[in-house]
Image (cartoon, rainbow, N blue to C red; front, side, top):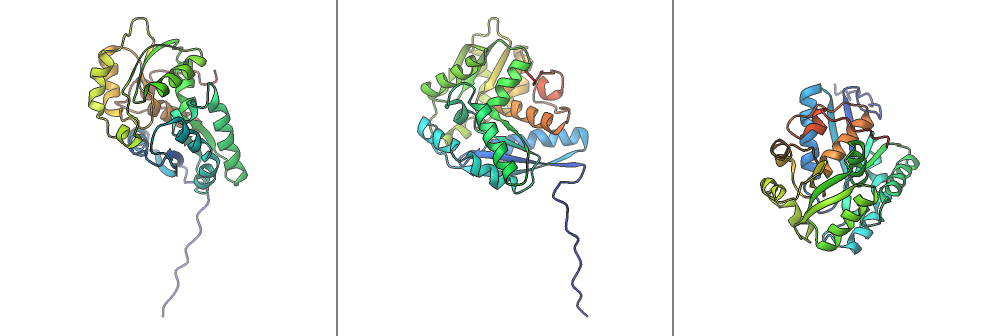
Length: 270
């Protein structure tokens, strides 16, 4: 006799040894869904806690002010979609889309996303890459930084203005002037150590090796930090740090810089 198996429904929240992370990414992003899972794989190896990633995508092909503004307008809809997975934290992973809206815009973007998730019945902590980078640098006490971006000059200037609007001086910056977002994702991260050497680092507190969630950088974070002797932060590592803090987990990630190894302790309440 055929019998229908009885399958018990699972609770909305993940098991105690697992966390769900939501991502909102540009449609052309090919980096955050590789670098973040790799970082959290290392966290799992160190702690045993598991992480899963659940994404919503907003249209963006070219990194222009017009397309970036259009992406920002879709953030709430994306938050509703990704919150359907009952994620515990949502990372809004498009740094320049937020920064192009003017200094301090991350606070409004994070508020909009949090409210959308809450109204959908699945409240979640929210971290934007823009906010994460500024808060992490501020928490580290960094008052003077150097930076690498993939952007055209206009957007590189916007990012500098945004960071300086938070009270952090950008002493030197190299912009690689790549407009097509898919091409940004194809940049060779192995070139970053050589680029970082060209930065004027006199009197700086930290290096922002990739001020973009699309520009690959993970393989070069530790080598550049070891060579230059300065804290090396990227949009991705700052975002990972804030995700961990939102979950109440201490960082224990090897090979991605002192921040994610737990050797630096930013005060993210600042």
